[in-house]
Length: 319
Ligand SMILES: [Zn+2]
Image 1 (cartoon, helix red, strand yellow):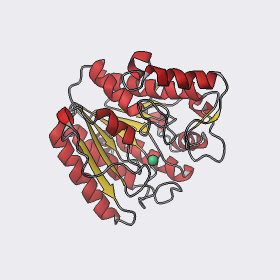
Image 2 (tube, protein in one colour; image 1 turned 90 degrees about the vertical axis):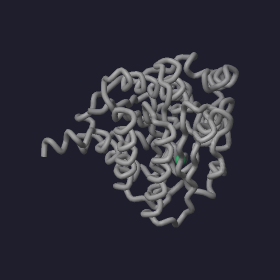
Image 3 (cartoon, protein in one colour; image 1 turned 135 degrees about the vertical axis):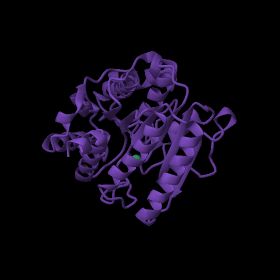
Image 4 (cartoon, protein in one colour; image 1 turned 60 degrees about the vertical axis):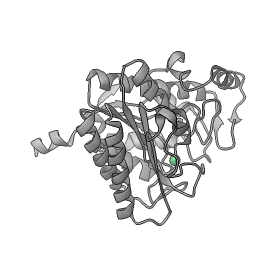
């Protein structure tokens, strides 16, 4: 089984029909999971809002207050060049971060080995004191800090395969040796960060690894580089839990990103991460939705990702 999180309140983060990060993304995913009967194979869990204590580990209190008050005062529209808010955005953003923490807590308690959080707004560009790139709060960072502070973990690994570099996540853990950050992303590309030379600082030295990939790189090379980097980071971190910043915008049909990946490539990425989770973390993986902007490609890619999270070992025994 897999813990599956989804809530209609995520649809109330209304960015407008012309915005790539729109509610239709989640509607397409949930429709696809229902059509494929994948949701029936999961344990549904309710989404829960983040505690201020958990949120403020990664974000300044003044920033959180500013976002909440701006939305409460009806200041809708762009709060950053790419990031749009509406009446439901603060609730959606706090629900996204809290859901990520809940998934981590339940997986670490042993309720299930894997969890998939279908949340929005996404998080990996969000900075400590500013929104950025469709993101308000950094869901994966808040969940990783919660795993350490609330659940007592000593080592974990964030794998970010979104086509964009997770600059907010890298910043958060750059000097923290407990939380490893591994990203493969298109480069040169938005947001312009994620150099291979960025490897962490101080106690965090060696706990950040970036694999920048040029557009046009053959998929075979992409996978070889992804796997090599993943194994290097797994050996360095020996993670007790693996978190995935699961963006699906490296898909060939994606209008924002694209590294020409096929739908089934997201099964392969999931399998490779599972290999690391099996060796080091007792199979424990928590996956959080980040990008992915062609709604059909996104829905199909999430479906193969979830199918792979659903314990393939058990499926084989049934065959
Ligand atoms: Zn992205």
